[in-house]
Length: 333
Image (cartoon, rainbow, N blue to C red; front, top):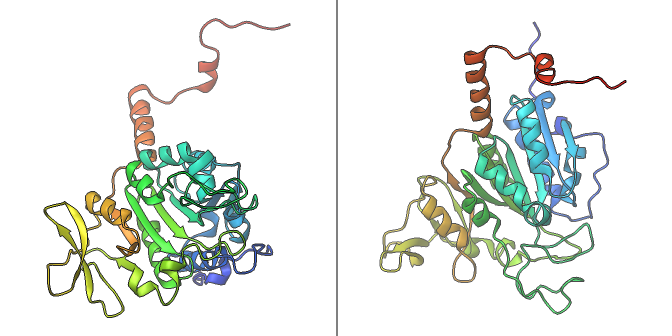
């Protein structure tokens, strides 16, 4: 037999013209995804991308795998059907912040609480891009848009806090243009058995340009980001001279100079710590990136098929035709 050559990132690029606005962060995410698929040895014939509606939803066209471009907010429901129809498939869900957390919020919640074995990528640009810049569930207070001309008066949804609250067992964050860290997070998400939720901060150059610049800009990143890794101290800063400490009096995180107090070591299995990290906001705290929480649990499909196996063992194989004809029937002439 002839050995099959490993696939490269370019092998996961489809023949379709990539059509996002020039400078859109989706280009960087697509490149990181293609690189990730190559590095994990993904089989294109067993890989499926499912999307809803929005700019991010174009994604399945640009990856040389199977894919479904579905309807607004319903990608998690379609992905659930795909995974239950064939649990051997490797399923990725692609959604924007509006798609996943507004019309699709209920579907997203149930996918996470059920712990379906899929990777869920939420592209967060804090705006509706495809429909020309209306505010979204993640838009900050004061956001001016065609639908909020005097500024939004709503409190925004934090995607990772939502995922943790829904019972997500793998919750992570990354930035579109930080390729190495994004690939690291996507690789971890792929390896996790169960629902893997990844929020990707993504720039919309047309309708919300630079909304994350306060912590993603090159000059600001060392001061305003902390990339967390399991078992490593939570330190940041240009000289890595500041860290995070738990104040036992307030049960809250605080920033301290390294060497003056005991710095926390990241434990990705600690849900309480993950919730504290997810809530941090500049300028008082850095934004936490990386795998905030990872604590595997039995998957939804394993429970479903376990019940099927038990029923078959107890009752034998079912005859669908016999089931349909059981009880009173009639003939229409």
